[in-house]
Length: 127
Image (cartoon, rainbow, N blue to C red):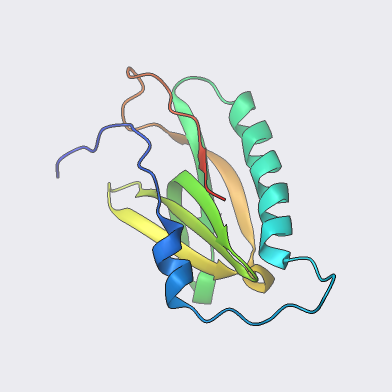
């Protein structure tokens, strides 16, 4: 399998959000996904800052009883309730996880970068 370059690929969440009907928010109600996103962004950045140059931020998810591990390249949200993870699995497959904020349960973990000799690309965040 061809090794993917260790580079950040921008995630276009507008396509995902535009396909979904968005419920009307009550006046004064905060959009939950954007609030969760702010917390995830801060924690992921803090975690990434602790890693050495050979590692990147990864997540381990256990949706529907199956374990999925991938290196996060981008994190986004679609208000009112979706968080979007974009990344690559250990076997090099591109993945995108769209998860409801009430279903978030994952482990931030250090993962080996595919090309540690190339400059480390910061984790991308899309608002």
